[in-house]
Each structure stands twice: as C-alpha cells, then as structure tokens.
Image 1 (spheres, rainbow, N blue to C red):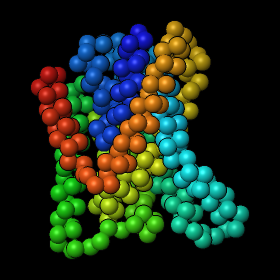
Image 2: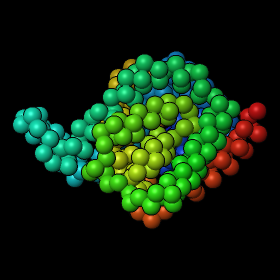
Image 3: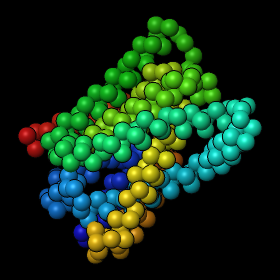
Image 4: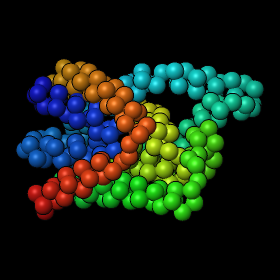
Length: 284
C-alpha cells in the first residue's frame, strides 16, 4: 500500500462512515473503480494487511466522534455511573446513556457472530453496488414515509428525551443491516429514527452517538493485528491514513449536524442510486 492510497482510503473512511452512503461499500467500490486489486482482494480475505489498515481508521473515526461529542459523552458516562450507584434513572442524560447501552447490544452480538462471514461473502464490487442502490431506496423511502406520517397524522416530532426504550433498541438493532457492504450504518439508523418519530436533527445525533461505541469496538478488538505480521510494512501508512480519517470524520460530523437541522436524506439517496446504478453496470 502506498502513502497516496492510504490518504485516499483515509479520507474515504472518514467521510463515508458518517455520511449515509456506506463506508464499507465505498471501501470495496472505490478500489475496484481505480483498479487497486490488492486492496480490493483484501476486503474479502480472511486476513490481510488492508483489514489491519482499516482497524486504525476505525479507531481514528471513533476518536473524532468522541472529540466532537465530548460534552455529551462526559455527561452520559457520568450519568451511567451515578445511575448504577443509586440504582435509579432520574435524568434524561441517564436515560439516554442506558438507551445507548441497550441499543448497542444487538449489533454487538450479531457483529461478533457474523461480521467476518458477511464481509467474506459480500465484500465484492457487484454485491456492494447492489446494496448501495438498495441503501438509496431505503433513504428515499424513509423520507417519503416520514412525510406521509406527518401529513396524515400532523404529529409533532418526538424528542430524543422521550424516545421509548423499545424504539431506541429498534434503531440500534437496525445497524445490523450495515454489516452488508453498501448499506449505511448512519443511513439505516436515521431512517429508523425518523419512522419512530424523531426529527432529522435528533435522528442524526442519536445515530452518531450509537455509532461511536460500535466503530470503536470494531477497531479496538482487532488492534492487535496491527502489531503482528499483518501490520508489517504498513504501520507508517496506518498513521498517515488514521490522521487523515480522523480529520475527515470530524469535519464530516460537524457538517452533518448542521445539515440535518434543516435538510433531509434525499440528496444522499440520489447519490447512492446514481453511484450504485453506475457500479452495477460497470461490474455486472
């Protein structure tokens, strides 16, 4: 892996992990479009230097999210410890903390059991292109259904503070779909949040908070790979790629938080449909 490739993949990871367009899908499709066959083959291999490289990018992305939402995480972690000590849930922050814990459990269990198998099976250009197209349909369908809900029922958006536990767990469970290359973690959780009554801003905030422990765990659990044979010859590239990914992720989350205050998922849906459709034609 060259340093140029490390920078390109780092930017790609930092942006597409948070934009609702699937980082896993793009990490398959972009190398395929550019003819980087060694990187493409590494995606679906049992073990490869490229997967070890991705570990560093995941940790950097999660770090950027923690930095951006540091006030939230300080309050959430403090609230959880207080709640454990008093054995009660008294504040909205404590409630949000437990909601994040419960909502992360399903994807954690399924991810540990199936992530390797699904990546090996579906991290191929044509499969990723098909799932990216499906992701576009999910985003577009979610926006249309949410609009219909508001038109038919004229209901005000439900605040994150009042989100039922069952709905929170449902939103967290929807992350399982992102194990398929091409389905976006932030996209599927935002759509589920919208359909459970959240507005775009709260749906995005909950999505990013949910993603932080999952992305961090995905990196930290496989961090030893970087210090073994798989990391030989690429540790410098990992450092450069991780720095780039962390900066890109921070800029991305800052942009998206502002975007979803007044805007929707529709432009991202259109992008996924176009990019996915062109990729299907290219790799069929």
